[in-house]
Length: 600
Image 1 (cartoon, one colour):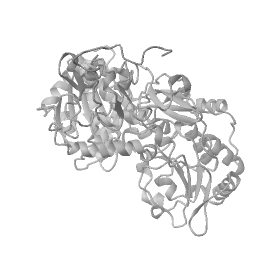
Image 2 (cartoon, helix red, strand yellow):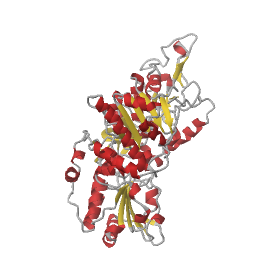
Image 3 (cartoon, rainbow, N blue to C red):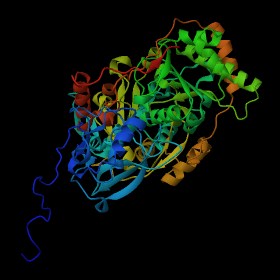
Image 4 (tube, rainbow, N blue to C red):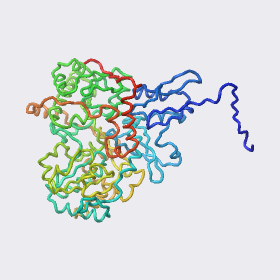
């Protein structure tokens, strides 16, 4: 032969060339185990970082294999990180496999919006299509890790998209139209309806520039009915004091913490990368953890205190053994989930948390601790929540039934997560929906204005700490969809209330006038007025009484992790993950649930 022999140079008399059978460890990771060099990086990641000891090695020498021993799901919310760790491609992405080579794609830096942590990502794309999303190093937020939901959401960006404006006809059917028709009809409704009868509701995936433009538009029509989907008690100053809704101590402070109290949150599924940092601090320090909420596996040991808010009374009064540890700690932190601040009884809960934080703060002051922590931190679930509160959007719990019945024009800005219907509002209510996916908000709309997803626009995102970060467009919006703030700017001109900005630079200049800290990218503007919040909590606690509130979070298992917003609900990969999680729950070979909890 012209280019050498067609026979292998491997001449072994008794054994054939070594080959290993591939493993099925779920819908996300593809295994090509013949490539494996037994470096055990994936095993160490699963055991040390993810806290899920599913991966291990069997056999010795040339018979050694890496796998799950019995065929089952690699049941971790951080499993995709082993793809980045594998040096030889034995573990690869099923979603990205054989799609493209890295040198064929373009890379764009962006910010993840699947949770409120603001993880830094790199979006790989080619010919107007997002192919994969991988983590970008940022030691102050996500380090080098990324949750599976953020990594494998790509296919959800392509399906169920709103591609052109639509108007509902006389038969109640949404029909495609052009932008002129949609804008003129929307502007007509804005001019006809009185300011007190119009309202807007902003969703969880909208950017800061869009929030500002919509607020400016309604303010020009003399309407103050601007709400977000997130909830916050109106006690202790409500959204007027930033300390009430920020992660005040920054994410990195967890590593210096010696005692952590988790209230009404499951960080493993609400913010997986944050939970990995908590686990790291727990392993490499003497940090103790207490939990008020659900008794579930968080991948580290903790003292389970109870499931309702009455435990906070015991901690305040010193009746609980854990309260002595709280008062003796040098760097204690309290993390409360945003879900705990939803529903009835949250005003009293918020007052109790403020009181407990102030008691701890006073003890630190008595001991003259240098640079004491702020103590109380709120972990949000919505990527747009902090930005909306900073800009003056009211929490959803103030959108009461009395106001609802007077609303004749409802502007849904990417609002898909609250269960609302036209029956909740005035009988003649007219609904305008602006967003990128055909989800529950688009179902009740009379006009649809197609917007851009987070990978398709240059935007500012503010994480749960209050840290503004800049994301860049990887691809252009599909079809006739447009960038959100530009849609609102065009609508304002048609309605005769032209907004004073035409470019991204000009709207950011306007943003710096309204909230200057949101233009200082990468920096956290610290909150203040903690003492005033405590004073208000004492006054309101004396007036308010409410039975104990359950603090069990909604997301309690891997099954609850995948489908949480309009993009995930459109993703076939996320649906496969739900199916795999259900099968894993009844898998005969899985170990019983390991509740790593200590007595209080």
